[in-house]
Length: 93
Picture 1 (cartoon, helix red, strand yellow):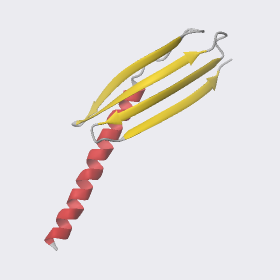
Picture 2 (picture 1 turned 90 degrees about the horizontal axis):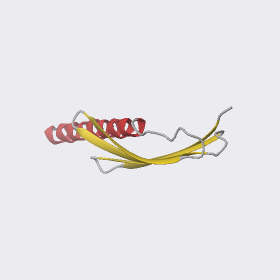
Picture 3 (picture 1 turned 120 degrees about the vertical axis):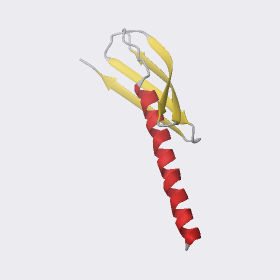
Picture 4 (picture 1 turned 60 degrees about the vertical axis):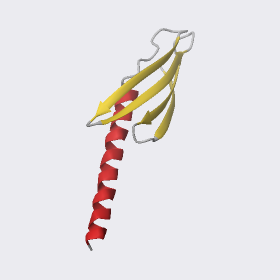
């Protein structure tokens, strides 16, 4: 019974650490600067730390020559060895 309790506690600790690392990666994505002038592109990197876990992000953004279309993509990783990615496109008028 004690062993089962220890296993449950370990799983809870793992979920907590994973969630902290995921939060750090999300903060890193939020910190990425984005291209803001028509016809320009940007590569960016950012990092985040949350309650002892860390995350990082690499991103690319580009704005069409006319300034109407914007594309953006990111890749993330964190201190727990998990990775993610995002992609988006927008049209502004």
